[in-house]
Amino acid sequence: MQIQKNISLKTYNTFGLDARAKYFIKVESLAELIEALSLDAYPDKFILGGGSNMLLTKDLDCLVIQVALKGIEIIDHQEDFVLVKANAGENWHEFVLWCLEHDFGGLENLSLIPGNVGTAPIQNIGAYGVEIKDVFVSCDALNIKTNKLETFTKEACQFGYRESIFKQAKKDQYIILDATFKLTKVEHQLHTEYGAIATELEAMGIVKPTIQDISKAVINIRESKLPNPKEIGNSGSFFKNPIISKSHYEKLKINFPEIPSYSISPSEVKIPAGWLIEKSGFKGKTFDQYGVHKKQALVLVNYGNAKGSDILNLAKLIQKTIQQIFGITIEMEVNII
Image: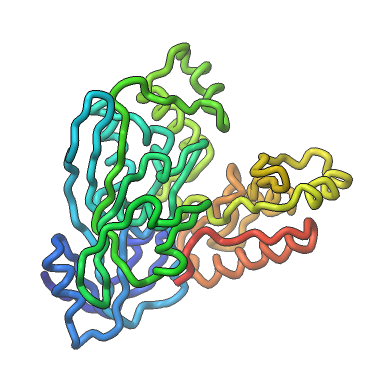
């Protein structure tokens, strides 16, 4: 375990922003993590995972601790399901592929989502009609103040739409070390009704899809719409899809009859934020070294040497414009640092 000085975080965040860490350390075990947290010479610390859901707007004048705990373990084998535990430093997509190789079902719709396993419960990541809460069992987390391990069940995590207790009441109080999922071995529940999955499967010539087929379809769709962070800096969806009242929605339909929606409850609907951004004229718009992706309006991108503050100002402009046009507040999904 070695502390490095003045380290660029460009390769440690999917936006590819060249913010710098005054001090940097990578930990690969629980013992190393506890040791790093106990370094009194560095009172200010920042915990870094896969760097996929954050926007660095400044240099970090502190000790950056990258959690790189690896390992995947089957902890229970039953006739029709399996419990799989993955450590926080495992790449999320690689973990999904590992599950598919073993024919474990439940995560296939979440293929190709950037980031690591440890940050997935914080965000309750989701895509194409599935969220991790649908298969989540529990996670082990380290209490930063006490250095004690605590286990959070699905109920204790208080999952919501892109929300959890780790983003709300327990924010910055715990470091997730691993997550356990209940996955199917037989009679997999296939989710093909959301987005373009069914259309893509048809284009692939698949009539009776397997979980591997669904994963491939999701990957095809995502690659056709979303930029690869290794090629164009981004953090996936930058905004949450807003939820508004049905009465508000009906009023909007007068001026925007084509506005799409998804029913949430008898009184609420969800509006695609990407549609709002595109309708506001931002899709494909470029501002010097940054902008809005040409194929997916939800994605803000760094084309090279943008600053995090530039991208943040663009996000605020988008929010302000949508509020003015539609009377809708869209929230940022990405954590602003």
